[in-house]
Length: 277
Image (cartoon, rainbow, N blue to C red; front, side, top):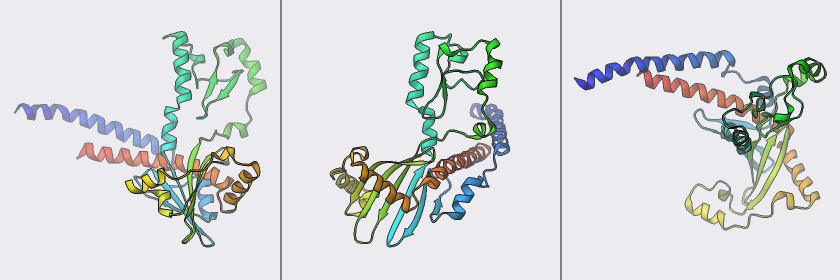
């Protein structure tokens, strides 16, 4: 009997939680249509030589294509967007402000709090947040004049800073092993970080402990930045010729943002279904 009374007391909380999730779902759906690709995403998919492989509920996205006798596979994940919330640079800046001011941190000295007009010395973190130094606070009387001089144009207002997204590129030739390139897409650019070669193609995406061990013992090559500059340029052109280019660098962050929103809505729906069951 006691257990039944406890259950009956818990039911109103279940209903409140379900209602809150439903409210969140409605709000998110009003903000963006998760069933329709954004224009830049749709345009890329319509004109790209790559085929999209996206499994609902999974973080990783795959793009594939054939280029002559080469099989090219690109992978990226929405985890890169989620990890922006834990940017160590941002966290250290916030901690420094707390150390300086204690609990009385001025509102306009908070990192990422410079969304108002009239900020002088501004800098962006990797995640696109704007940092304002305490000495850059502007008196209200001065803000109108600064706003006239520094108001961004409509075009600048519409631009949002990109966020870095890792793209792993695997290029395989029959019987010749594979080449793997670790890159980052940001601000419309593909930046190469590392280049590997594997005689056994399965090592590029090692799925077993034995393969991982074999991969770990292989010579990985020097950091990309240590290579001869002409060699760096030629490797960049090699990728560009295969479609790993500016169009891809613009597409991937937008698709990550779109997919993360869609996965979030799916997560909310599944959670609500469980609560209501």
